[in-house]
Image 1 (spheres, one colour):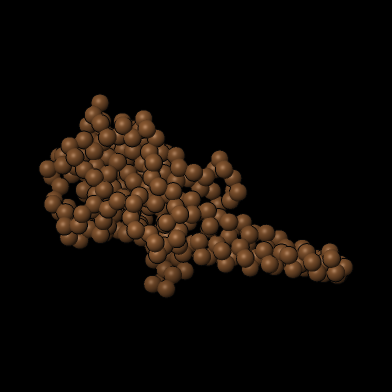
Image 2: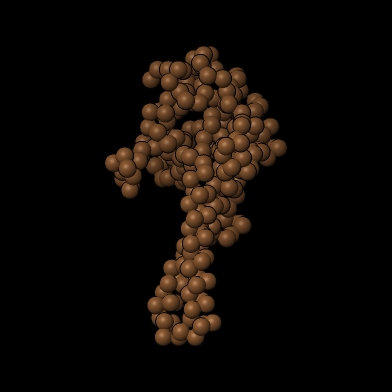
Length: 240
């Protein structure tokens, strides 16, 4: 497919004769989950304290059954609020992906999280990963959710297959929009197959996600900066 450089909302972060880096993020919008997390955490914490006070301090033990159910609901709400807050505040400002055409490797700056373990340290955090370009495939995914736009959610995911088979080893978000994802995947294919000379001249200049102005978005402002491990950073930017 042809690339329209004027259509792309975000140009590549960088490209040269060795590697191409594209911006990527698990979250479409920053700040929404933080606001929701603060609201849910505050309301459920207040509910939990109220129930504990009414049942145990005021001695209304006849409310123990309903109160226990309400307290369990409040605890679930507290965990959900913590999960939302951590997602928005601990996720890095970007999760870039690098395509090294000389090594035929793809380096992904991935943030891992676990909704069932909102207080865990080991289950959360950035763990960059390396994949073989030949094992990577793009998939268009559609799902329906409770949205005002009709509920259709479409995105492009990258699937890692076991070499020589159709067994899926891993899958992660590449783009939150079908058209945008197709353009980016076409860009990666052109770069990996033909080199940087096959890419168009982009109308917009590259964006520095680490140093962008985030004064009006506290979630992005306090989000950790992208910092590749030194050995992987060097490997992903150089020839074999």
